[in-house]
Structure formats: structure tokens, C-alpha cells
Image (cartoon, rainbow, N blue to C red; front, side, top):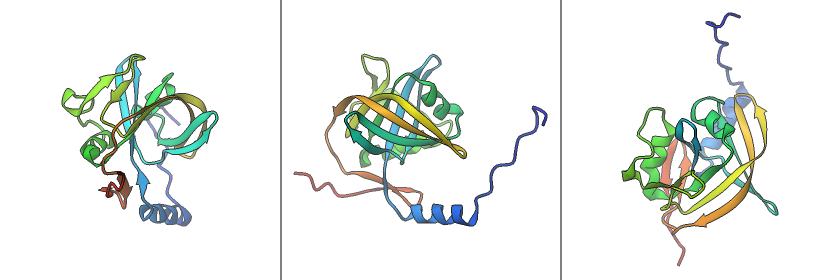
Length: 173
């Protein structure tokens, strides 16, 4: 294959289409994952973050394509996973599409002493590093050890459901 030709994108199977339909109706929490690279800050929106263990403190998430922001995060020494609330739904949308404004002062970004982009208004921010990765089709699953947890103030939880962001009531007192 010449360097000008690209393989065709995989066509989802009937089971793959069923999987997509099943998860469209299954709400997932929303996170923004950020890292600092030699080219500057990078970030993406993820709805695949889950806790794995407490000793060592570890989470898992997946990213699609190992290029762009996802590739930069995969190659970064450390990154920050921000668990966000409804007040950041527009921010989540901007990190979900290419070319949108990111890391502007108006969005509330600063930097941790270790250099990673940090959203202090997030419900929680977890600074970590990759323990292992597994390639699965066009995605990469990341198991990350958490080095530091910064707890913020809780707001109305944000979930991703049926290709849209939705807020849930905050019942915490």
C-alpha cells in the first residue's frame, strides 16, 4: 500500500452496532483528560473513566485513535483526569470536537506545580501516569495509577447519554 492510500475504516458488525445502541441508553460520567506536551497543553473529553483499585489507586479509561490529543495523552509522562459537573458541559463539548477553543483563561484553566493543565472548578482532579495500555481495534485502553487526588466542590453531576450531556440533581448535603 502506498503512503497515499489509507485502509478503509472498519465497518461495525451487527454486534458492534448493537453494542453502540446499548451504551447510548447507559449513562456515563464525563471527564476531561489533560496533559502538557512539548507542543503545549492537550485534552479530550472521555466518558469511559472508571475506578479499578484503591491499592494501588488506579483507574481505567479508553481513547479512540492514537493520534491528535489522544496520542499526545498516551505519550505523556503524566496527565490529569478531571471529573466534571453540569456547569462544565460546554467545556466538555469543546474538548470533544477538533478545533474548538481549549485552555482559555475564561474556561478557568491553570497549571499544577507539576505542569499539567488543571481545572480547579472540577468536582475532582486526579493526576496520574500510565501503568499499561491495551490496543483494542481503533481504541486504546489505559490503566493509570493515580499519584494525587484534588477534590473540588460538587455541583450537579454531568452524564453522557444518547450522544448528549445531561445533568443530574445534586442530592449531597
